[in-house]
Image 1 (tube, rainbow, N blue to C red):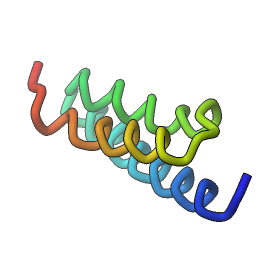
Image 2 (image 1 turned 135 degrees about the vertical axis):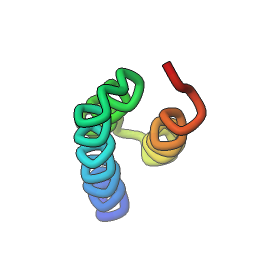
Image 3 (image 1 turned 180 degrees about the vertical axis):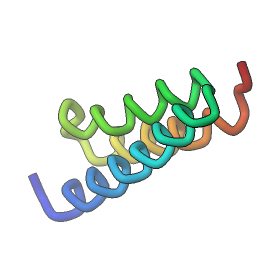
Image 4 (image 1 turned 30 degrees about the horizontal axis):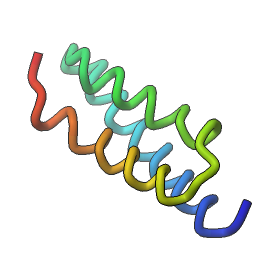
Length: 67
């Protein structure tokens, strides 16, 4: 584990918490799930590039997919 991975993990977890709270208040299922996955995925993904790509996709997904 290096510093970059740790900082990106904290960033995506914090963004996931915000998206999760937004999804819960707005009753938006996609935002709720994406926020939850963003909070959990840094624990399981050890490759920095994969973490950044998946994190960015999960942050963008709720704004383009409306259910």
